[in-house]
Image (tube, rainbow, N blue to C red; front, side):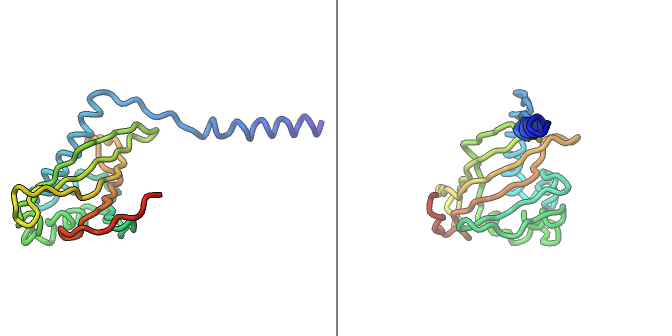
Length: 179
């Protein structure tokens, strides 16, 4: 009896991971387009400080977070509509003296890879900046983003966006060594 019970328990434990793993959701072509549009709006809204930064903030879920990461070290999470509006230059900052806007910088996101998950999708996208230092022809690579996207009643939103920067105020920083 003990041997049979042990075999049963072992079989149950071995099969637990199969139940614990959820299949990724199936994304439609429209889901991919809407996620790509979310990323495009991010660039447009941060470059224009539209609606005093609240258009940018509204691209995130209510509990969504932006996390800056420099030299492989994540910074503090920026969460909440007010804080997100401020990080984009708006909110209490009023879209005044926003460095990248004053310089005429534009953000471009390229090489966007979207991967379905059980909860929505994840993605990576490289960031290019045009116009650093006021030179409209200067293009710099400024790292990449790691994104977590979720579908909400208002459409796809960022649950989390981590920016792995290689520039700080337009100056190159040394990225961490490859592992």
